[in-house]
Length: 387
Image (cartoon, rainbow, N blue to C red; front, side, top):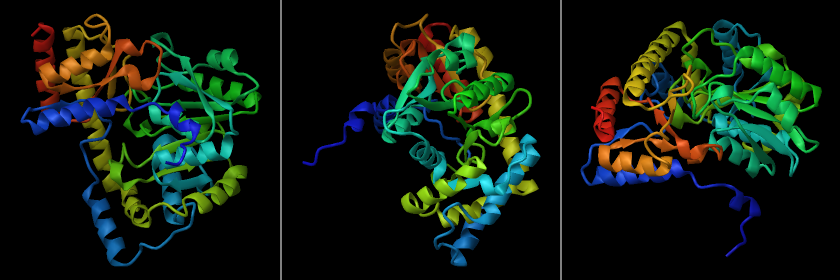
């Protein structure tokens, strides 16, 4: 057999998938399982997008596009920043990608030399750190607890930056915690990184699903901040594999060269269909759905409190609650397994998201309808003996 690259050994298994696999086996055996596990909206693409896909396919618009994406979509994305986030982004800085993962892969390939470190909070979304590893870099996870809103701070950058550090990656709002980096803190982080000639990359795939206060993009921090976003979460197009980058103007040619050679182009049909996301009528639907997610969060937080499931930091975005279950178990993976088998509720142990206190936490996703979440809380109450 061919010898695998050593980087493969540095990429951890996705433990959430093991729990989901167990859930699938239970369902196949006839058990009713409530999924509060995978981060995929229960909403799907809106009718206007599906109609646009059909029209594009029937008219033969399925051939290669420009490597950076079709101009109309790049302009629509730039306009979205202006109207929704009060941020001015030149369309020439927008690069359409094969999902947010594709965006992050392009960015890491362009920015990280082999062996360089990238600072990230612990906990963090596992794919983000593994993409850094796949690009030859070394993710350096910085323990970031409730006092930090589970996020990096400027102090973290000052304390942990070394000559081997290339930059930082933060997600706001975050998976798994649903917490955002406060705008002033994010500005301080960017300033510290800028002073060290590094890169600041902000994963904003859940920015559209923010609930408390203004939704503010890191685009306002300057043209040197790199943004990653996606059509998967706010626009509910997970399987369409479409995302985008916003990069500094001087880096666009390098990113284009890389995209031309590595990706060729994102899905042409998905791009043409995604144009339908930006009409006023479509945006009204997405905002209504955002309200549904907020309603679910606002139901769950007091329910968790009543059940004695601690939520150290109130989530202000995405569709996750990061709960400290240490009052009920010493190992969150064991707790998740018992919760699944005894209560029929599937949640994700903190083991996937880092090393710092991972045994204490479970991530609960509320990307499922409210009636099922109500049933889940009743089941958990019975499980904990507090119904």
